[in-house]
Image 1 (cartoon, rainbow, N blue to C red):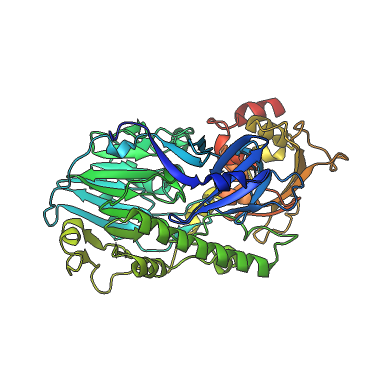
Image 2 (image 1 turned 180 degrees about the vertical axis):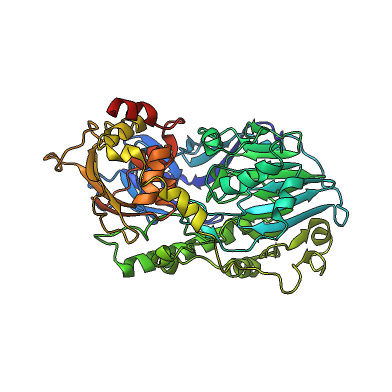
Length: 565
């Protein structure tokens, strides 16, 4: 079969007797040979089918007992609900459609479930692997998701977050990067930044780089929202940013895809899935030389920042424990399925270091990379690597002899691995500067901001409250309602039936976000809010808008102040 052609994969076969026994409504099946689960929906003579896997984070669906019509299923992970009769998600409303499988009947009235697969972009230029010389391909771990990759006489660096915080002030580096990290960065032939989250696109890091080498080639994918959408306002001067399409090999010998990267060197593939739980819809290259992927969990405000209803401390602790175990098992299974020669867990080495976030640090338990590696080694012959800052992996050595003691060279004895202090002050000063900004002297900033944001015609009322460090309402701070159905700002909740959320946010961060027109990731992923919702429903359209779809240019506060004056 030509790797450039679309293929059809048979996922499940039902015998004529099984077809005859199909019930009206929902039917659940498992392919015992592959362990994959499927849902078939029957309505009269029409059949629809999909994988039994939530599009959010891959959870298993079960029958939704609250649905008396028997059309919907509920995810066992986060209670997302799917109407299988339409293949549309109903919680969160207006979010995704489920990928539908092809249903075909055979000549004996048996049934086939087929999945149509487009050609894999990483197979577009197939090359037989050649033997690598020792030292030819080396990977040096710097910190978090940042790797220094040597390919012959060329070097590329992934996702350099090497100084300062991420997500406003919520994330700080767990590992101490090598002391020469800036020199390494300046020497690189190119820098690859996977996406715009600030633990990968670190403006504090890039600011230091730009002062010494503003013309360094930086590569990013052509995402819906440009990765460097905030560059002009950031004050960082970089002059050689290259936006490349997905799924096409670049002359630098890299294949860029959404949230993951494949690198080709003499026929050997290096796969970096970064922190995407299910990159590329789960279609990934198999038997790569090296695979790097996230492992830790905890990169979200859920459920630590939620309260009310089921969100007791006991419930949150059990949920976190269960979800972390699910993530470990999923990653171990993924490695077993893809069979890389070497696997490295990374992109999870952060800590909630600021003293004000002590509760989050104690609650947001993360996976241990060694636990994942031990789980992988129980089920496969894959070589695993738990990286330490400055450690070097020699791919040529490990591919030739996985037991080669020089295949992984650890940093010198006495090298500092974990950070024990962080320079909070310069970054808190930037945030605090927004608190006294002139725009907040005028209550009409609220209407100005949310009109600029452009989210409306959605039946949700949100109460926004500015708080102190401990999330207590700030004396003299703003406390207001936003009705997103008509984008009004009522004094009381409306009488009609509506969804309701309370969002309490630390005043320095929320004003910094508002003042600069930033995405709400700083608030939510950065643990700078506390949330309560009634009913307990995730409003995908709302959060997706404020985390991804805000206007690319900030509010025109100068014009606003002139109007107020």
